[in-house]
Image 1 (cartoon, helix red, strand yellow):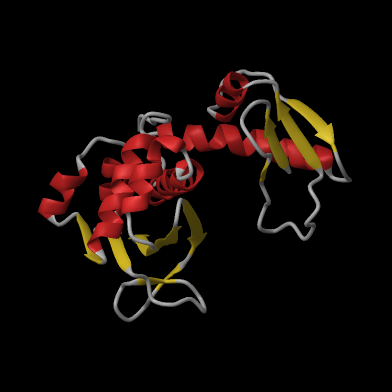
Image 2: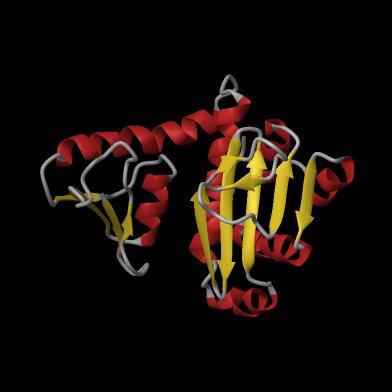
Length: 215
């Protein structure tokens, strides 16, 4: 499906991994940014579904369930830590990808060296590649030998950011625990090209201006 927000730049594409079709079956149009924020955060807002291909009803039903479920899982006390950590880590990293080209961050992005950061919390693994003023995020697989994150058929990352356990990731990414404190206690570990990881933390500060989740 495609998500289009009036006044917010190009459309975004959302593809379910199990789907075999590469053509979107639904365009979900938001008349303004406020409506998009409300709908995507689980509140009531205006979204206009525009059919593009077969399967539109199934796609719309999936989106409605998934968008509400993510918020419910983060707030529910009985949600397993692994799921909460996965949701927060995905939101954080893809949030970095979304705001990397913002004009406010132009100077910071010029200072941060290019490279790939492997990010891991338990069995959750991602790769964040910084190049110029862009950040691209991919799912990855944890390496079995040394615990360093590596994607299939991809080179070793230039830097590594790892959380000792799921709760550490939840506390840091939700703002309940400062990253510097977690680093000092060993709950968060960084290695490799340190200016790359430290630079991404600076970009993360800007992300907090846009989104915040209480869990």
